[in-house]
Image (cartoon, helix red, strand yellow):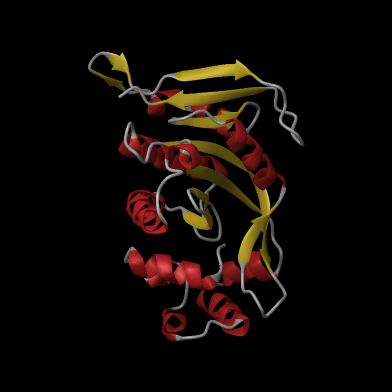
Length: 248
């Protein structure tokens, strides 16, 4: 997860109820020491201790959401304009993540990595993938053909949560092959599409319940689905990827 100051700042900004994630008392602590974080996580919910302290693996769905061609389209913005731009962008995207029971792992400028799964959302992996897909579709539709138009990489798999051991920088995050593969997928993702690899649980979910993802509007398929052969990105074995395109 992001460092604790980022979590608290985002939750305060978007008025998310604190007891979904952290004990309310920690919100009142001006300095968020690692000891305080650990105690809050342990006391608030044993599930947090299971994953963050005991090292249990978690099956989760992941989204990497970022703005299409941000660095080239907005290279002339001033620092103040960039700040205002991202304030508007986060106001659109972050509430959508929480709406579909996601949690933010990293915010990297115009890129946001979020997860759907335990200990924040204790459902089976297929259901977590479904929530991630619905979230991705909502974001693509909301930002379609606007200055915030986005592309989204969708992946899933088994990860471990990691709490670093230094007192100089408090961070909770995820580690594992699915995260590396997510970055590889993002690098080849197509604009204003939801992109995912073949031979994954994502593909299995979409094949199992296709009717839930097929919508027609004004006589045309709103979310057409395309596949293509690819050279496996470095560190992966995927030779095919798919994209779901919004046809608004």
